[in-house]
Image (cartoon, rainbow, N blue to C red; front, side, top):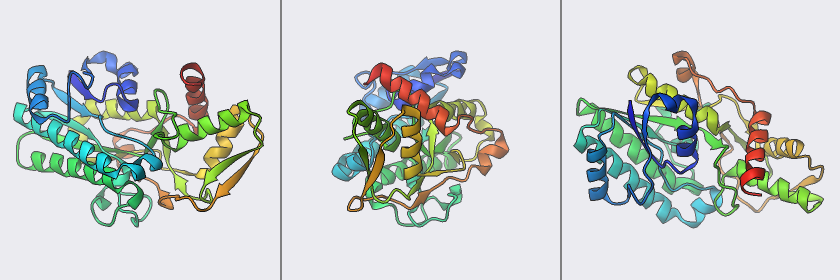
Length: 305
């Protein structure tokens, strides 16, 4: 199968390309200077010329809570433009299948956990990443509309939070787990007695190893016709922020203590996906939290420390 991966140099894209399942396919993974998703006309022309059997839309402006709060305009506009342009280009070129990668931030802030796909679009979004969430919602709905009004089939996968190989470890833009790994590593290197946690650390999050997530994406690509229009890819269990810090400290070998800055935002109290549909279809994540943090820490030591 000829597969176009957008965002091929990002966390999801690079893990998709490196996964053993990718070897069974003809992979196209243009860089942004070859496929500028912010340029509608250029995207339309490039997708038509490449003529893939399947597009996996994994490109996006991404970041943690700090970046989302500091740049809401960019997170909304850039991600909305990318989603619209790639989906409309696919429609124009009559690309038969698209897997659009969404985000669990698409769920309403007050939705009942675990988060079932039927809850999408039925409530107020979490303010700290609302711009990004709105853009992802728009792309998911556009994919639905194209599917409902044509003989094309465009579906959305909704992963929980991710971390792993090829992640960003800069605190200004990183998500929670890579930020924790870097903070604890630096505390150990400096022999620091304490590490600060934003908020009280009781908020619960579901973080999946990137290798597990892309295994799910390749499984979805190869099982495409059996999938519903929206499908969660997650673990089905979560941990508190305090748990993530404690596990990282144990893996890295730092023996200090944690403090809490209660003036900082903590986001939603819980964001846990319901994975019953994916499980019923035959897919589950396989990597434990400690194994995933250890592998990601080793990657950090080799490439970022």
